[in-house]
Length: 413
Image (tube, rainbow, N blue to C red; front, side, top):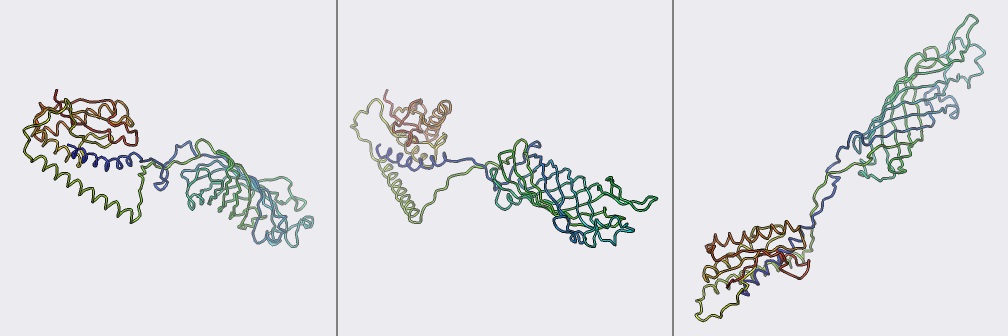
């Protein structure tokens, strides 16, 4: 009987590490699977910016750079639909300061000559209107998304429609004069441009912005219908306030632990496994030889309850494994020959699982063993079943796997 117990113990030692590994599975977010869409009310922001712009057309560059700098400001509301793609819509106001060639102005009176820089006349105009930009976050694209990143850079493409206000020369009966009131230009202005939005994280909901852009402006505000397409560069500073949730969540996946071994360690494990298989085969042969020996007439009367063998189970399992089927077959052969009464007791370790789960496992395990032995020809009348709520093994949690078992005892009551 000691040989049977040794075989069962050896199988349990091989089973325990696999059970411990199964309990180490973790569930984490995996950005490689992409990101989940947030609610519609999340990832909104509102921004306010102010700065300066400079006209860059052929005529405007004839004027000193400092004299071409005009104020600029905008107000946007926007939303990020993914960590990469966003849209903002709002209004902006610019003052353009440039120059116009004399060839584009007719009948300019001598009183206006003082407004010239060299051979070019000065001009100013206010542009007010709406704009929409489509944004692409380059930092998240190149470096991966991070909710707490201090700096982000977004490339955007935009277009706008604006009204133009300016002082225009007009005729009267006395000749040519300058009207001091602003009024609509001769048509709307259309613009398209590209820019870089640099964001610096101040806290969870507030960013400092540095907005650098270059627009192509279809200019319709030069005097007497002289039209010129301008390039305009602008730099603005501002703040953005972000509403509701500002983060993006990735799908959750299971991560199983990986165990790496060197070639030498792998060869050693393979050798140990081969030796263990050889020992199990030898024990099985010894068990067969023992079972085939003639019974001795004079036998020592066994104790009222004598241990025959233990059958072990993986964690949270009540079905027989392949290795334990072999043990159960050996036990069945002994029972059919000896024709004694046996007590089967179901156990579950109390270090894992709830009381309710463990109670169900004890009943299921002892029922599994009894049903299997009956299928192998063991009379059900000699099998008594019970469960025990204690711990089969008292060698602490590290060896809890030895407590997940069904004990088989000779019952001489």
